[in-house]
Image (cartoon, rainbow, N blue to C red):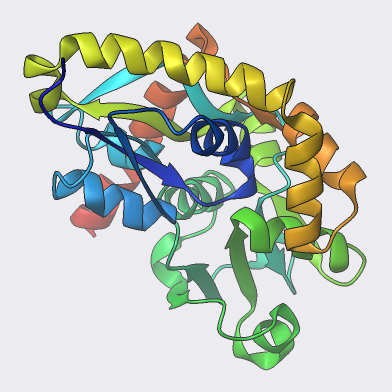
Amino acid sequence: MRQKDINLGLINFTNCLPVNYSLNKWYLEGLTLYDGCPTEINKMMIDAKIDIAPISSIEYLNNQDKYTLMDNICISSIGKVDSVILFSNYEMNELSGKNIAVPYTSASSIALLKVLLSENGINIDSIKFSTHTYEESLEKFLDGTYDAVLYIGDPALCCNILYRNKYLIYDLGEYWYKMTNLPMVFGTWVARSEWIMSNNTDFIWIKSVLDKAVESGLNMYFNEIISSASNNLKIDKIFIEDYLTNKISYKFTEDHRESLKLFKKLNDCLIKRAEIV
């Protein structure tokens, strides 16, 4: 019998609903669930308030000494993702020296944006990055305040539908795939390595539970999930269904592993160049 509950974090975005919905529905004994946005979940893991969670991939890559990767599940896209979007008044190659707002909820997507801009020949140091909290509408953000705005998660998913004919839209998952021919891993499921040392049986059990949660969320509970998400976001079910089945990928493969390595390499190079300057 386990002596202490397993503390598991969940990201409160639609792309995590197949897992979240299943776990909340099952109400498994000995499992305590915590939810939050990616940066909040990242901090809970750093502070050891939770044991297992889907954290930002860049957070895992920068702290591999602290975390053990769960190689059976992730949050990724192979091409368009629809929920990591740069809305812009300018072409990508015209963003040098511009003002770009990035969300407080993001870690991986901000790092990815900077990598993609740099690979597109943009001097990152020339750009003024500001943090936004979705406090204004996208229209207000882009009406003179900022030149481009990064949205992630559900706000990005909704605005990608509402504003697709008004602004230039850059899907970062699609940009990464075109550049690398690899999936983009936005979120990695990990466990604290220190916790695993004394809870290896629970770790193996949770890996199995997560596999079953994804399977149930995309099959048994799928109609309930898309109805719930459609009601919450006020967008048509057809967009949710397409998003969860054709855009978001939960399987972790060798291509995903290679993508993570490349992401870290490019991000590290960007950081080193900034330090030299």
